[in-house]
Image 1 (cartoon, rainbow, N blue to C red):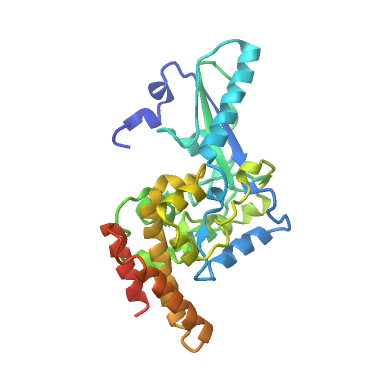
Image 2 (cartoon, rainbow, N blue to C red):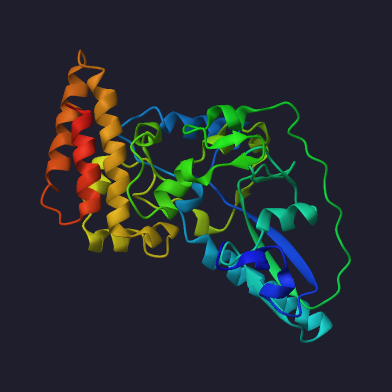
Length: 319
């Protein structure tokens, strides 16, 4: 933000000559997602109650959306050029200092929810946003009125209370930020609150009433990859770097690298150990604890200081 300054709010400074912005959205729920009311939301919330299951945010279970949406925006620009002739343009999707939600809201794509994401009456919030900056003067779309009313479900459910007030998010506490963008140690006070979420967090969207209208996408790009959904923490922990790169090829997950992947898993495994420790009377829980301990101990010689800090913390949760 410091590097780009007001370019975020002034499109013509980011792309000189920009006169208008075309905004677009692309739904990303996999085609096989159940369509019965909020069944898919309940199913995803249930994953959070299974401590040894690794939870990856829904949007990241398929192909990297940056590649998919940007390619389609470019095709759209080419089709526009067929009608109006050559024109200056540049496509973006979460890839530059662009105020995506603000632009989408002003163009009538939806309204900003209290969790700060864009909401649409026909599609909830389970979609990606993209933009085409153009040097064409286009008629303005009308903004929509907000429809969150008195609902505060997203604020209440946030595991780390990162939504500090309606429409205000402290990114430093957001699990999506911590597991994806944050490169260093995860703050000690936030680790127990992360549960088994290892890449991103969907909680505020899973409880949103508007997401019963979330749309499925027929593109195979967003189908869930085998091995990333419903997988056990220990299975993912066992991946070496080559296996991590192979399993995440073409996925947005690859960008965090193997070290941060293991860091996130270590936190989730520590949380699982602590949860299972509270079920000492259950023989199955004792067996699961031992499996987790052995898995963690298998990387005690790893040279990464970042990983060792989180690994030692995780082992301490089962002591």
